[in-house]
View 1 (tube, rainbow, N blue to C red):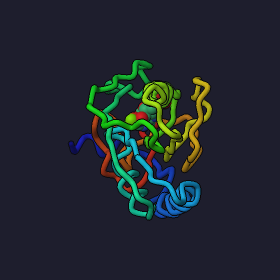
View 2 (tube, rainbow, N blue to C red; view 1 turned 90 degrees about the vertical axis):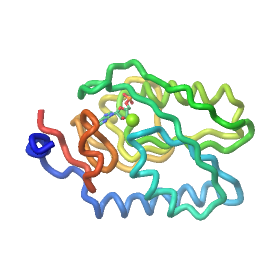
View 3 (cartoon, protein in one colour; view 1 turned 180 degrees about the vertical axis):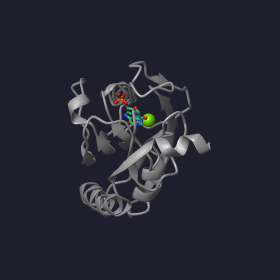
Length: 177
Ligand code: IMP
Ligand code: MG
């Protein structure tokens, strides 16, 4: 593990900036879903830290489901093949679904998940991501709630990993090439 530490570079988004922005996102979500019950669908593992901070700021009735998903398979370039693990989901028909992920990159993950969840007949479906690499997004997809637009850099921390490391960093940092 010690040889992993020097590979991380400058802070792109500080802990303070993340917390401030999450408060704003939570306020927007709370306002938009007032009077409704939410079902959060969180994509694992990347969204785990963001999810924990965000949920606690949304005082609405909600249920939480998680879906393990991966598209990187260890590198820093998306493989483009989104691996959805078959977890049993409860009946989500007629529920208000909010999909949560760490980052919107090529858009393939959100596209696959959105198409999959639409087949279940939800009352509504929106998505929320902490980060968006806009210049990399090739699929015609966008998230309804976006924390930060970021440049095309491979980032780690606050749940995001490189080969499963760095998820525990409290801020978003750029990984050195
Ligand atoms: P997409 O399918 O290309 O949009 O990629 C989305 C997924 O790739 C995210 O859920 C992340 O797990 C992963 N990912 C994309 N960019 C990064 C990054 O810069 N650092 C770490 N993981 C990333
Ligand atoms: Mg992910």
